[in-house]
Image 1 (cartoon, one colour):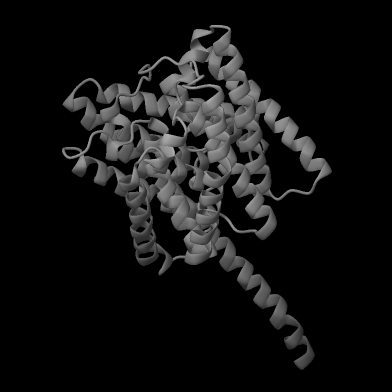
Image 2 (tube, helix red, strand yellow):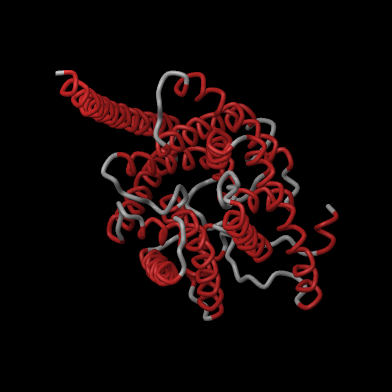
Length: 388
């Protein structure tokens, strides 16, 4: 590709592109209130483009279209879903469709459409639902324009910086150990589905947060108890800094989320650089993952700061998600029977999530009906009194 002739596409390149894309998505939202199908989506597409994974981009968009069509036909035509449940259902449907595509095409492409990073594979599972959600809430063309503007701007802004960096420092400056993740490539699909299902189950069940959809999976795949503790410490620091900024400048919840992603990514990148330079092996292992250690800190900080969450709930939820992902992956590695059992675990988790969701929707429907009856009584009572 032409871009590859201008600069090296390595871990540092992808991190710089990701942070720039998130910052531009923040700027666009602040200026116009347009959202981009997920804050990381334009940067994610840019990274796929830099790696030459056009097919993966096309599949992501195609799955988003199909997920939205299915959800509109099966649910939205019959039920009024809250924002939280609409996003959750779209992400779950998109992930299920991607798992089917992955399994059907495995004999033709390995790994999934040539993507060789777990975070990008997980993006193939999460991003379609995020895009479909913004299509439904904001509109098809507005969302596509927002994604395109931020994506193109990211390329335009990062290309000269990366070219100049290549002239100064040829090659990669990242210290990494390759191939140390606990999740094998042929089980990335299972880990991605389990991560998404566990996140939704914990969120809508006991009300726990798990550092977005990637937290539990990354904790199991790459972190030790010590590096997990460091990630929590960086997340708490990020939460406090963003909270201090929010007391000075008025910020919407989305802006606080985006600011957490930016500051968390910068802090994590800085910490990884110095810990790896000091030769701390767990940090070197975590540094082998391009985006996960950067995103997980900001996602964790954002979850910690939510009104219905806390530091403890987020830490416990992330650990629980990691346990479910790890349990399913380890079970699947025992053989065909284990893989079938892991599939049953995923199916059971989905079923439990649906049961909890249906109960909550029923409770919300009854509460709405009761509120409607109260409003009607309050409206009709003065009319009855005046006529009497």
